Length: 527
Ligand SMILES: CC(=O)SCCNC(=O)CCNC(=O)[C@H](O)C(C)(C)COP(=O)(O)OP(=O)(O)OC[C@H]1O[C@@H](n2cnc3c(N)ncnc32)[C@H](O)[C@@H]1OP(=O)(O)O
Figure 1 (cartoon, rainbow, N blue to C red):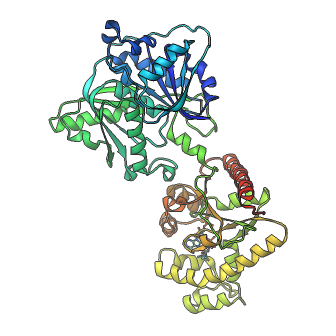
Figure 2: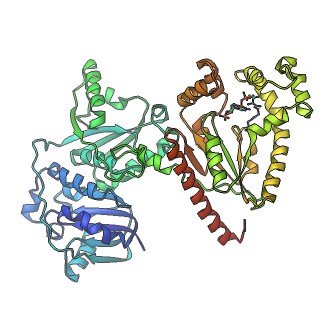
Figure 3: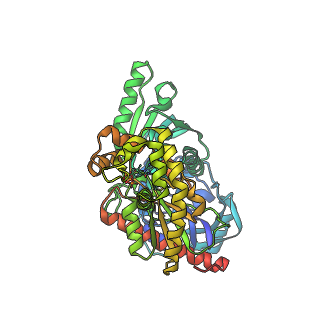
């Protein structure tokens, strides 16, 4: 199967019709070149084509083509350089093209001439396909009152998991830009309020995806893609900017930028606002109605994000999943659901509590270190009292951990053996601070349950009757979500409904089985 294709369209309203055929040939990437005046525009530029209107007239066509590609599973980039420059008769793409599609029937000679003359980057053996889909009414470029172009254009965003909405925003800027485009990409310090922010791609990756897209769609512009740590970025002091492109949602921010520029006697920026793209294909009811990165992050919950680290010292069976996550993040409900689906489950919190009982060696050690104040009337460890001593006091918590964890791992190993002997081959070890305890090495892979800190505090106040201060002390005693998800194969979140959590866990279980089946086939391991 081909990897990268180029679709040449002479009628932009045909994109939706041809995409199903195109997808039969493709794995991932599709460039689209719109040629309003048919192939002859590239093969033999005429006086008419040389006097093309402002490229801004193609804005609606471009948005329309992206919208038609929305529900297809292909990374689409609509090329703009030839639309913008009537003199340009060669299409440059960063990725070499394996197959070219035409939205109409052409002769072999016409297609081969196009391949030879108009493409700078094709693979050896690149094929051509002309798609006969019948006639569709041609969609003409639309004139607009706002067809002005600018030398210096600026815009900003997070650009996580570059999606169709981002591509439209960036393309709207490219169509209006003659010389230089500056793109501010929010760095980690600006992401805290976004949900599932810990799943946002690193800033350098987002910057490089933006740059790659822009250089593909119009390599003739000079691009400056920069990280920003406040909503204004370079707009607060660069006098060369002329136009800012914003989305409906960030229009207010654009206007605020002009207030700041006015205070500094800088020229006001023209503002072009792009409508949000509405999604017609929500995969979960928890998703937003607009096309958004948030939706894409939601969709990765319960999928496999990373390959597990190799654990050559562990036998393949039993297969151990370390289930961890911050306080009140809903690990237990995830663990219970996994148990219902057939996993064995070791709840290390409860197991730890059994080690504190009178008669256990750990009991005496704890009394020796913390004193008899930690005991209740029956002489048992009062965990509430012990908790109030250690959470908020790093030294005491470390002392407790150092006493508990080695004994607890020994007990956990015994539990694992018992459960394995009862016939379960996949065993979940649920432990809140599994990584801090260094238990990753005992697990084949790590799953993490996350919720935002303020939600954890809200739940703790309700569940454990803690004051705001005590709740924050407990949340802060653990590593943050961003640390937790690093290297985890699967991330889940119980922030939404009970049903949505169940669906995530079911998905994770299904994906795990598919992975284990593949591993068994590849390596001859058997569970
Ligand atoms: C390696 C592991 O993760 S084993 C499982 C965690 N347990 C331990 O580390 C043992 C030390 N901790 C304890 O014994 C108890 O937490 C005590 C005695 C301090 C407090 O007991 P309790 O008030 O009954 O609280 P409980 O045990 O339910 O723990 C409450 C929360 O504290 C957090 N917590 C537990 N131990 C620790 C720890 N060592 N460091 C930081 N946070 C911890 C957990 O996230 C837990 O919330 P969760 O169940 O929503 O995840």
